Amino acid sequence: MAKPVSILAFSGSSRRESLNKKFLAVAVQEVKNAGGDVTLVELSDYELPLYNGDLEDAAGMPANARKLVDLVKGHAGLLIASPEYNSSITALLKNTIDWCSRADDDPFPGKVVAVISASPGAYGGNRSLKTTQQILLHLGCHIVPAMASLPQAHKAFGPDGRLTDPRALKGVQELAQALVDLTRKIA
Image (cartoon, rainbow, N blue to C red; front, side, top):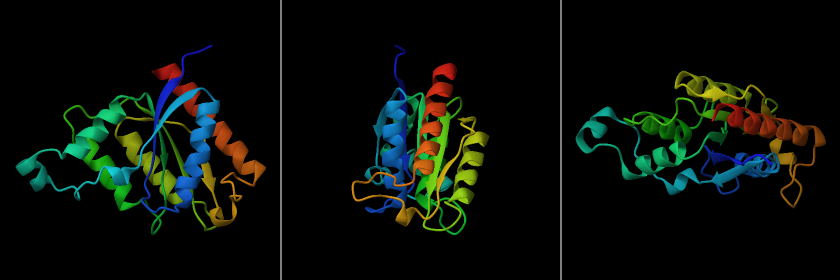
């Protein structure tokens, strides 16, 4: 049996009842089922100031940014839930990426990344998903081309937190397998 690949998972939402966190929980389980060893973190546990070059020059990289850089570096791949706010990614997610990319030992080049998104709207967060992929591609990541977006996400989960739509679950399973397979090939 192949050694599990290490995947770091997080959501760009800090809301307790976030639909993206619920969707991420499903995706994390599917990555585990596909052979991934997943570390799930809450970005709100790594509070960061808004990125500012003057602040960076004066005080250096915040300790929490350093911790996140080390977490990203310690994993072969990333699984990111990217909520959509005003047709784009959240400030939390963008700020996290911005601070981490400023490290002298930038953790992003060569990482394999899968992005998912959930939304109560009809598009499932696709605009955020694509924007996040574009940013990470620019930073040197290998992007899993499969997509898993969840429209009408407020209606998509049963009381146990499981997806009620078999088609949506199949999409997450395919993305999870693609993430593990590509990470295994590249890492």
